[in-house]
Length: 497
Ligand code: BGP
Image (cartoon, rainbow, N blue to C red; front, side):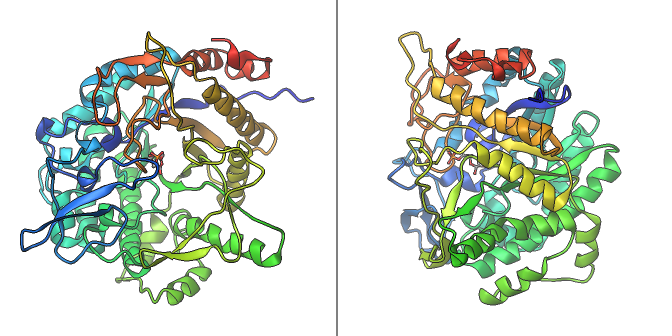
């Protein structure tokens, strides 16, 4: 049997997003972002958005529902909004990065809160305090030899842009985004090599990016086109301003399998996958794929082309592909349905896989599968930037969590990455586990759904000391990294703390 080893320069680390970790919403002159108005929910109770109409009336509705014309988010004292204080990474970043370094991490992915740099979004001069905050994070990483990986825009926009111009539906947002990029490249360019223009660009569809609008596919493709142009221009700018820098974007890429081998189910799988490829094809290859035309026609959607756009897309292709993959799903020929009036895909469960408490199937091989799918398609380096297990962690009386289930999850997934690298020869740059320090869940707004190697003492409503306590998986990772992955081949190591 061939001995499999991870390459020595493989980057290992964790990932967070500003609105799920930072908090500090009144610090450093930060303005409000769209996700600030989203309340805490649960696995069964969807998150809500609180909004006002122009007549001053106050309303609350499902965060994923379309909002009426003129709706503007507002903070209602009767609700808890987890993003405002999150897990207070804003004040804990030194301790958090030190813990990551002591575990042996060599990379750290975090995102920029746009409104710390431009509180409204349309200013010309960046806010020095906001820039300084992110520079401090970068410096802290570099102090420990940790390679920073920055997501420029993670699922949110400044509220001012949402309220005044519907965010990405207006082409002006491209310029505002490029101002943000310029400020970041200027300030951090000499220190940061890896950048991501957007997070999960293929899933964005609502208030968080487009302000209050109908949530239909027409709207989505207008916004997406503007984001494609913005990303391509950012790639070009980054290459000009930071020689040697690498720019990617992040695509939600958990695979879907056909539920059966019926040809109709298999073809539906191919069509469903195009919900990822359409976005990635434009950004990796520099043009809309042929099949996009049929999809656009089907939804009666129009691309808001302007002169020069085709060249911009061609000249701004991404240097690497990055993705999230937590699970796999299945589709069948009838998987399409309408949710809140919008056609969407219903993913079925997989009878062969176990589920987490949040109903996410655990499928380690899905990682090897995606890595191969992507590499076969684009032949560019790949960075796995989100993967992990969101579970209920129960600390003992000292706050210690013995998360053997997470260790098992990681072990199995890491073995599949190693096979992809060593046997399939996929060029993988690195891996960042999602929510390395426990943070607020995007989907449900809960703290209960924890991903981290590091426990944060805080409940769903923000009560707790926010003390950081390494879990069993932290100590396992420490050993894993020290051995450059060799402990994957030892028996029962998952249970040894
Ligand atoms: C991705 C997002 C992350 C993160 C993750 C886990 O879609 O990029 O921000 O939250 O999903 O999802 P959840 O928080 O709902 O468990």
